[in-house]
Amino acid sequence: MKNRTLIYVLALSLVVFSCKENATSKVNTSNLEKAKERDAIINLGAPIIEFDKTEYDFGEITEGDLVEGSFNITNVGKVDLLITNAKATCGCTVPDWPKEAIKPGESASLKFTFNSRGREGKQSKSITLQTNTEKVTEIIRIKGTVKKK
Image (tube, rainbow, N blue to C red; front, side):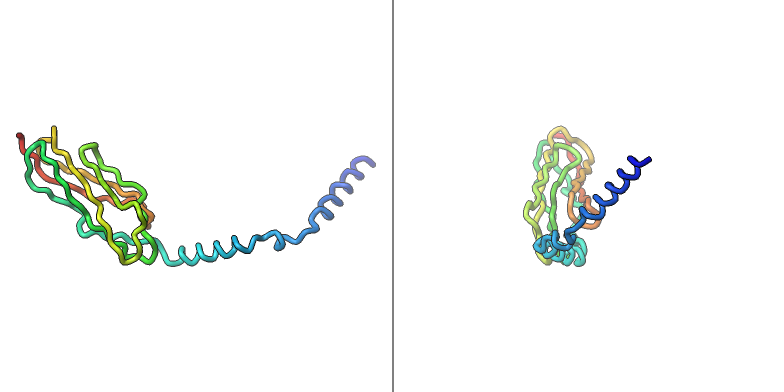
C-alpha cells in the first residue's frame, strides 16, 4: 500500500514539475507569418477555369489523318490556376497542357493531337484535367467522324 502511494506521489510530482516552459515560447513566429499568408490566399477562394469551348468537333476526316486542335483556358478566379495532369480516354489522343500556373485574368492553350489510324466511324474522346479548382476535375471533349481510307 505504501509503495502504491509513493508511486502516485512521484508520478503526480513529475507531471506538475515537468511543464515549466511556457508553450508560447516554443512557437516559431516565421511559421505564423506563413500561415497568415496561406490563410489570406485560401480566403480568396479557388481558381475558376473557363474554356472558350468544352467540345471540339473536327468534322469528317479520312482514317489515318492527324487532327490538331486546342482549347483556350482562362482563369477568371482570384488565385493561380494549376493544371497538374491531363489524361485522354485513349492513346489516340495526346493532350499538351500548360505546366505553369495561369495567373488570375490570364489565358493559356491546351493543345491536343488525335490520331485517327484504325479508328473508323463516329469518334468521341474526352480529356480529363486535374486542377486546383473547386471541382478538381474538368472534362473537355473531342468528336467527329472518321471515314474509311
